Length: 406
Image (cartoon, rainbow, N blue to C red; front, side, top):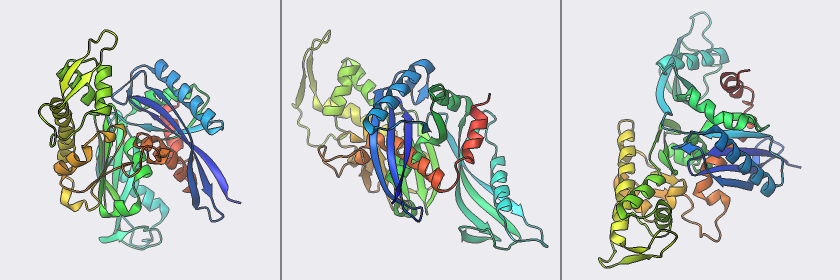
């Protein structure tokens, strides 16, 4: 009988706190035979700005509510979680570690591989930052390319290329403190872009080369793969809330009405809109109502989203030309549901763009297809990879020593 493992991904986002409970069936050979979402707990965020904690007590309450909601829906007790982290303080770099092997004993061992990774960490990460992920890109043995596992090979020089994701230690710790006092163990921390990639990208896309954008309320996380490896990643402090604020200011309407308008009426496209096409806003509370031009609504929306895409392209092009990303761009996150966003992205990036969940009707959509849950689902997948790869107790021990002292 296949055994089912329960894993929980927790996302503390700008607009929502979300806990996703998944069940992973594992067959006799140890490979995952099934992956199903058992329940999703979700509450509006309080005490979070641009993906970072600004009020620990408020966020604790949100996390407690979200976990309780997830437990009730999934009908399980939650004891362990993997927490995704984001924020404009998150950075990344590519580094190479090199090791000269002694001539008389030149067989490469696991110790040598670890030494190469340690040397890559000497690349000058700021003192206030901590490496959260060291993702392998490639190994070279005496200049030989494409080495996947150098252990057991012989050579005079071992090199390893790594993508290192790092962030300010205290800001990561503040996120973890929102969970620490809730009698729930944090199994690991995963950078949001890496988590989202676990949920929505397959290996074929990564091999071809693909850029993933996760557009949330307060930030946009992005990650670039080429030849199967992470080449670049980062966070921009621009998201769906910025579109809402622009609409509120430009149209002189309350923020709550601007948010509803963005979700129901706004589009990134100007073509096909008639000059006299208007939208009537009904009076509500202290808002007297009014009438706005659809073309103005779409123009404001397009400007902000186009600016976001141009900023990301500017970050990507020094690392990799867009025409070399054969897998195109994949967009997820709550703001990816914005009308016309796929067409606008294709205009800016000049490559095919896929929007997560765009192939499913709203009635048939499952949690797996919903772009709002990509990060939390990916965090749960990350939890399974830790167990399956035998890494639980490795990386987490280091994280625990750093952030949960005493």
